[in-house]
Length: 167
Image 1 (spheres, helix red, strand yellow):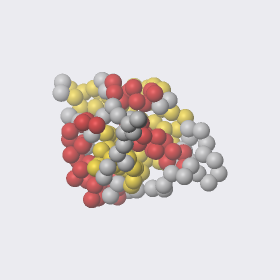
Image 2: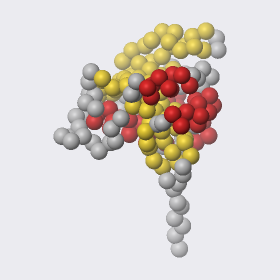
Image 3: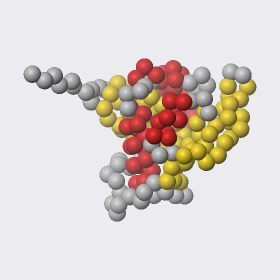
Image 4: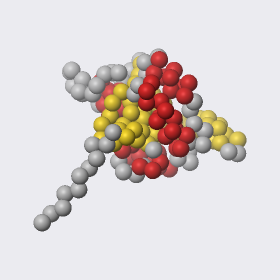
């Protein structure tokens, strides 16, 4: 007899304003210096790629990315602290990379706190490499913290895109 463990259904879908209460709860739980709700609203308003990840109907994470001029900039990727280290961040990041490729980006850039070891492990494992340093970029409990600038080149999407939903 074999036991089959059911995995909760995970889906990635476009973020809506109705998601902002849950997004803000995750943002505040995950970060000492969270984005404001206004920043998220502005990202939606200007048409950035704003996506959420749901597991069994519960919002577990989100990603915000701008795309233009052949580049994508990952602005925020966050998974709720209580469900981190289960592959959800990797799944959401894969989706955002496919979306960047679909929109014609050849490179994805991001900044990450030097102290954020979990995020660095994820990004490096997904092919991002350090290309620079932004001194005193982030607020910190004791002043400011440096950000590492990471980049990843993207393979060109086949004609017709990758199948990722457009936004």
